[in-house]
Image 1 (cartoon, rainbow, N blue to C red):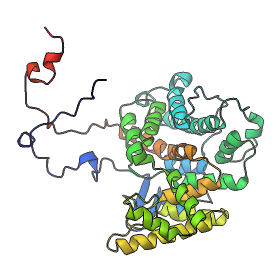
Image 2 (image 1 turned 60 degrees about the vertical axis):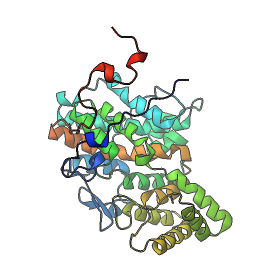
Image 3 (image 1 turned 30 degrees about the vertical axis):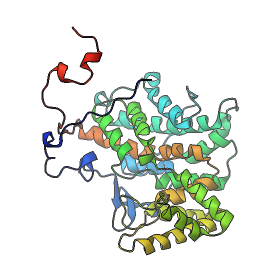
Image 4 (image 1 turned 120 degrees about the vertical axis):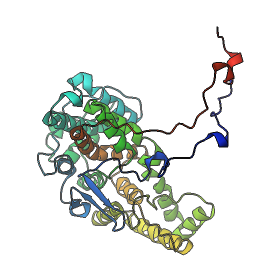
Length: 385
């Protein structure tokens, strides 16, 4: 087997210094001005078009929050999904949805954003967003399981209930409320990797299906999409030992990552964790008490070890609890995040369309100086004239 090539390197004296203010990965760089969402870093709040999510969760359903984010007003929200079967089954829900969304463009004749009106773009996004939810439900239901009759789905009163009915057939109403609360809390969160990806693709004038599909690809990385499911083993261990403090101490002593705590944006408590904790309590989630005990033990230990650097609960912790309550299997949790974020992506795609400017940042070249092909390693190993 041929060894993988190592990354090219240059000598230190050949690398020019970075330009003033340079930060790798665009961290902290303001690339856009947006009216969509406002994560309050210091106050621990998240507002959609000025409305705090604490005033939305449990009061406004996801389909109408989609409209708030995209249109800046309530209604009309997401329409019912077309009765369109998912065209691909790979065994991975995220891959199925990403591939199936991209295929909507030729199926439905989606045209480039550059060539359509804002109204048409908005309609395309609504239709594609709700199809993403349908595809998640269909993929999760699995191959060989009879589809839920469309008549039964049409009896549902909200987009979230339609999703749960398409997936489960006869969903528990409490589970519908849990998923809706999670989707509303996770619908938008400013300029993250997947939202940036959606805007970059939209800036090229590509169709909305391509923009949404690309965003899903960006979210597949564990450094962005997170992993609420990784919190679940800690809950299970706490239930087994009834000693959350020992569990937390062991994780931190081993220098392992304590899942569900700390966030790059918020210096105070993650507001999404706060609203999901409240919802778990209201819905009487069976693991609520053990989750509270684990959370309190973790926060106490973190404050004792790092009193000058507060680390608070993030959304992943209570997302794991509420999705577990709704009987969402761990492998499907990333797809539930994808479903929620279709709202924010759609809003940013529309905003980028109106911006009408290609996103094209610069890069500083720090590679080799000009040279001949003969000077490149491996020249003697290839055929050449």
